[in-house]
Length: 503
Image 1 (cartoon, rainbow, N blue to C red):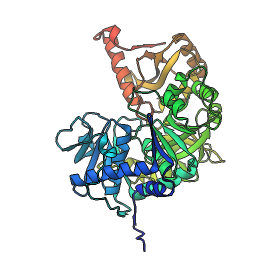
Image 2 (cartoon, rainbow, N blue to C red; image 1 turned 90 degrees about the vertical axis):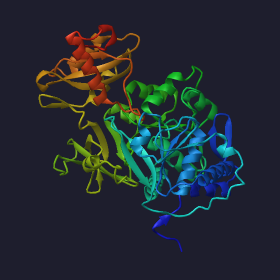
Image 3 (cartoon, rainbow, N blue to C red; image 1 turned 180 degrees about the vertical axis):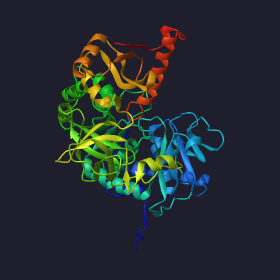
Image 4 (cartoon, rainbow, N blue to C red; image 1 turned 180 degrees about the horizontal axis):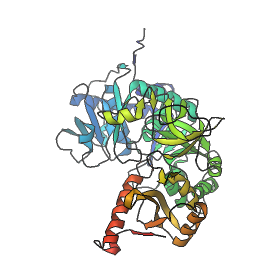
């Protein structure tokens, strides 16, 4: 009889399909096409090698390798072994922050801990001389995966996923996206994100194939798209822009291609261009690392209602509350809180963040939103990012939606700068393209928000974003504010700082 308090790792779903449909394609990586049978053989090879290294129970293992396929073999093997894995992105001090006891790497060691050098041949080279690994059941609450979640603050938090979290998240993901054996998913998000990790696992568990991207800079997303012919694309707003802008003139939208975009608001111009050049079946998703997918909308509706985040999914529950936790009426703005299948319970070693984000079984993502009578959710902005001009609160997203209609901007972000006396002024940071016209921004802003202070314009080389493409407004405001202060004091070379000046 099975133990209701234990369950197998997510490898069990992959193993099932290696037995039932062994010759079906599981992975496309570069020029390689890997069947489920070969995939499981490679996973077994890696698991045997790792198991032979010897690990203390409860060890957190950092994975810091470049090869996209090897990353997956290592992560799946660690889940089989009951060890919590975390993918490292190469940032200084990252291994210390996640408290990795062991780091698996392909050449660059991490000081202060045990390092194990792995190679691309770990999966493909036979490991028959090592004992076969015997899968076992794992406690529901046992740690399996750690994902760094920084949101828009730029301050990382360690979201802990147990085996039970991942099982529940998998059920919800499969229902939302309808993954099955005919799915061929191109995932452009890195494995360091929850989407880049869990979407492929869910596809494999349902017998579908996953197209893995190669290390950044080797092959563009568009070339992978054209070569691998996926029928589902899961991407971020920034990555969608890269795909669409690289499409050749003779590219025609796929008849059955469905694209899902998450991470940040979809600008109207990119929305239209993607539906014209890539696919009409374009959907936007609102969610978080901690809660997973929360709401979905067709991109055409998102364009018509810029703040609309979509219809709340059956796998989630959303409420909008006031500062005391009381429900506000439909149509009124308040703070969003969420319950969902596979909802993370805590951040590791971060009591302060837990107290602010997890309360009474709800997750508070820090978003200001509005629910309508039909279950539609609009996200007005981040609660801590709402601009307050003498009591008039304005969302940066709403300003961006309006200004993005103007030509000549490759990228842009709106935020508030604090001036003398604590008074805020609206500011827009712009990565200027051809035909950029500062005066057009000034006129449009003054026409739409005539009672607000004049907008400031800052030209920057890039907009800081996290791995999901969300704008790091706090970081951006600090950088631009410092540059503006230096410019006013004359302490910096004017040619070396952003051009920040009121209009």
